[in-house]
Amino acid sequence: RPGDHKAYMQLALEHARKSPPKPTNYRVGAVLVDLATNEILATGYTLELPGNTHAEQCCFMKLAEKHGVSEENLKQVLPPELALYTTVEPCSKRLSGNLPCVERVLRLAGSIRTVYVGIMEPETFVAENTGRLSLENAGISVVHVEGLEKDILEVATAGHVRG
Ligand SMILES: Nc1nc(=O)c(N)c(NC[C@H](O)[C@H](O)[C@H](O)COP(=O)(O)O)[nH]1
Ligand SMILES: [Zn+2]
Image (tube, rainbow, N blue to C red):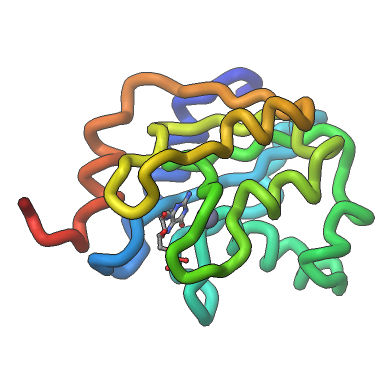
């Protein structure tokens, strides 16, 4: 249903639960929605695809694969009004050095209009996630969907040694 942000975030959390726990990242789930049709274009979760992949990255890689384009060229085949739901805000820096998801989202600016986040990134790995500002500067709204923070954090950090 249009505007049912919590339902989409709950779905993203269900995908996050499929992610294998690791002490060096978070277990995140993401859902990409076509706002014109309310169709779910892609889902993803951390490490779903081979390599050290992130949830948002998996959404984009799967959709690119489906359309027979590279992830870099995904923008060419995307509808004009999308929303990305991700349980943890897109990363702005990755300790692995891989391309952060904020950069991957910015490539899709103009199609992705809004990023809905369940929680902002904790400071375990990256002291300050600067993603929100970068996204807003590119005209992409970042909206915090309230109410699932506790569950999202629990799932995200399940692989971490309890301090
Ligand atoms: N939004 C988001 N989606 C994910 O799927 C994921 N795993 C993270 N995690 C952010 C965290 O900052 C990085 O996981 C660490 O910085 C380690 O970087 P790598 O994951 O090894 O590239 N953040
Ligand atoms: Zn990421």
